[in-house]
Each structure stands twice: as structure tokens, then as C-alpha cells.
Image 1 (cartoon, rainbow, N blue to C red):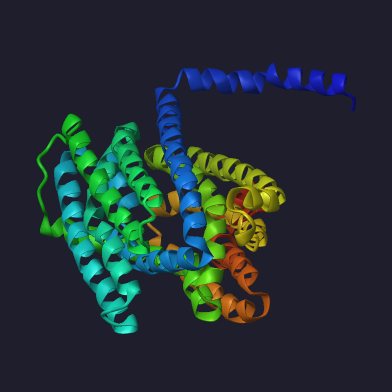
Image 2 (cartoon, helix red, strand yellow):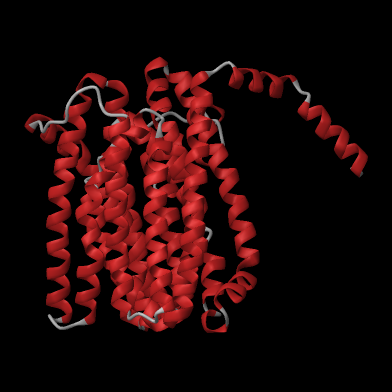
Length: 453
């Protein structure tokens, strides 16, 4: 087909009745416009903060070198296991309950925040204690852990963000979170200019969490709940009883997302860990897209569930298809550009990170599909399925790293990451839900005659 023919086809597509109908439906739907506006604010905020953090993060990596950079991110990977517990798996449940049970908004938020605060303090103590036992009281790893781990105490303030999500008002979190990132990166720049020691960069993590929590509290005063916050014992029991599968699932996700950095350090040392950590920001930056879109879509999917099965499943299929197309494009572009990107950004000392990036970025497809499926799991109240999926992924991650790290080095960790994501997010549905598996590949389940297990 020549250029003129392609242009004519494109014009026909633009003028098609289906596209015109979609535009009219969007223009006449306040809920669709609210989703789009909310997602746009979130995308602008997230990528603005990521871009700023990426620039300063690259500068930090070049300053510290692969060895010290790997040591710092080894500690961050260790803390990630405890941070996964602090959230208690509440996010989707709290947003759902706030969207469908506004009369108890104060009790829901107050109880969730109190539980998270207690979890944060306990996890900080356990993390520091574990590092002291493993490396000793005088170790640098212990100091880095204590300074960076303080952020978990302030993580309970993120409960306020769930209130804004339920109202499709996530833009109200943009300013406080952006200010927090701006402050933390300004501090990092000052540390880089003054040639500060490694431990100072760990402290910045807690500073960012503190500033962000104060900003969220101020933002909440401008849009408070209709009812005063209070702690309900029965509410706490209900939240914990429903959320524990998501908590265990989140912990298992952390295992197969972070265990590679722990095992790289054990098998190959801090320098290899630094190369792997250098590739991750470029490989995982796209994960913000499905996370942000799911925040905006969660209340709408919950309401669609109450409207009827057909409309609900059609919306899910549309989400799976859109997420799949976006992720495939991201994977291909990043993999091809990996050597050039790493060379320009980090320099020759980090050349070993290029093959890691070219492989690891293919995790994106499976992450996107897993995020889309999380919308379905929350509304179907099937958190135990998420737990099974993530435990399977964690087992694959550990086994693959044990087999591949000694023979393939740091690229083996990238391959292990892709295998574990694929096993957890997609191929586990061979046993769990063939209907969702079909949707993840963009296929309407009825076309295969597939029925829900």
C-alpha cells in the first residue's frame, strides 16, 4: 500500500462511525471525563516526579560507582520486604468500601491509618533488628537500614491518598508528593555537591516520606470526610480478615521483584548488584502507567460490577487489550535502545547494565496484565487467588536465580525476573481462571467457549 492509500485509509478510520460514536459517548459521560482527567493528573505527577528522581538518581549512581550504589540498593531491597507489610494489603479494599459505603468513611480511614501506623513502627524495629543480627551492631548496612527504614513510620499517611482515589480526586495528592520529591532531590544534589558519605543518601528516603506525609495531612484539610475519623475494632477485624490474602500476595510480589537483588549480592557481590539496580529505573518506569490507570479505574469498575455482568466484563476486556498494546510497544522500544541509553546516561563503568535492561524490560507486559487482573480480583473478592499466583511467581524467581546466576551472571537475574512475572501474572491462570487468561491475550472468552472456573 503506497503512502496516499495509507493516508486515505487513515482518514476513513478517523471519520468512521465507531470512532465518532466513541467520541460522543466520552463527551456525554461525566464519569469517563472524570477518569480521563484523574488519570491525566496522575500521569503528569508520576512521570514528573520520576523524571526528576531519575536525573538525580543517575547522578548519584555515577558519583557512588557500581559498588556503593549496589550496597545502597541492596539495603533498599531488604527494606522492601518490610514496606510490603506496612501497607497491610488495604488499598483496593479501602477504595472500594469508600466508593460504595460513604456513610462509614471516617471509620474506614481512621481504622486503616491506625493499623498502618502500628505496622510501620513494628516493621522498622524488626528490619533494624534483623540487620543487626546478620551484619553486627557496628556495620554500615545496619546504619543504612536504620536511616532509610524510618520512612515506614510515615507510610501510614498514604491512607489519605486512598480517600482522594475514591473520589477521583488524586490531583489533590500531586502537590504534596511533588514537593516531597523536590525536597528530597534538592537534598541529594546538595549531598552530591558536598561529596557526602553513603549513609546521608539513605537518610533522604525518610526525609521524603516525612515531607510527603505532612503535605497529605494539609491537603486532607481542604477535602475532609463527612464523618470524623475513629478507630473501629470490628472494622479492623473485617479489614484484616479480608486483606490478609492481598498482604501475603504483596509480600510474595516483593519476593519475586526484589529477591534478585538480594541473591545477586550473595552470589556476585555489590558491584553486580549496582549494575542491576542501574537498569531498573529505565525498565520499571513504565509500571507507573498501569498503577495510575488502575487508581482511576477502580471506582468505575466497582460500579460496573453492580450494573451487570456483561458491561463489567466488556470493560475488563477493554482494559486488558489497552494495557497489552501499551506494554508491548514499551518493551520493544526500550530493548532496542538499551545499549545507547545506558552508555549515554551512566558511562562505560555501567556498560554491563545494558543487556540487563534489554531483557528485564519484558517484565512490563506481564506487570501490565497483572495490574489489570487486580481490578477483577478485588471486585470478585478472590484475593486468595492473587496469593496463589504470587507465591508461584516467588518460587519461580528463587529457583531461576539459583540456576541462572552462577552461569549467566547478572543477566541471569534479568531472565529470572521475566520468568517469574510471566508465571505469576499470566500463566498461572491456566489453573486459576482461563477466562482471564484469554482476556490477557486480548481474546474475548466466548470466542473459545471458555467458562469461568
